[in-house]
Image 1: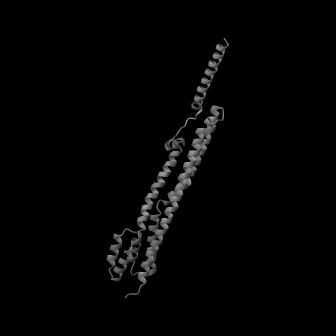
Image 2 (image 1 turned 90 degrees about the vertical axis):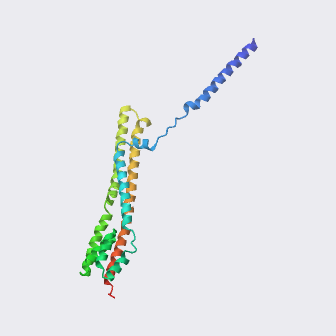
Image 3 (image 1 turned 180 degrees about the vertical axis):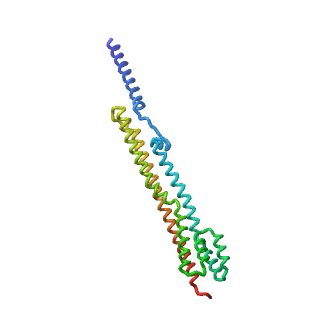
Length: 241
């Protein structure tokens, strides 16, 4: 009888151990946090409606930079034979050929020199003034729309700040509806706040860099134009052989 009681106790203990082991094995599965992943598009959507104007500003900034970049690159091409041909035409008295050659060349330097050639026979100061006026118009063409990049650099972070305000309003609105302060309650507002702020700053910094990049390219092109104008004036002051 004692043996049967001991056997029953052993069986009961073993059953309890098996049950505890199963519970322990199932515990990690129950307590393991669920991993969630989201794409960049989903993150942008969480930024709220304010992301629309920020996205538009980014597209405009990139478009203006690409358009200005290639335009300034074309204008700053070093025309090695430009002044040599002009020198030969003027030295040989072929003024019409010099003007036609400048018209066939689309560089800003050629348009400046063309205006100077058309003023040949007038006082040197008048020729210099006419070249300078054309040069100013050419620089204006180079700088066209570049200032928009500076505007975008200024207002994009402001849109991000507006998104921050919207996120804070959403947080307080959700708290008033839920009646408690928990991470679940404020998470939506935090997404709007942080994503819009980061996007606005990113677009603003990018536009700021692109604006100064374009200005540096324009300055280098202006230096080349000034050098070409100086060479032409020096050519007119050379003694006749």
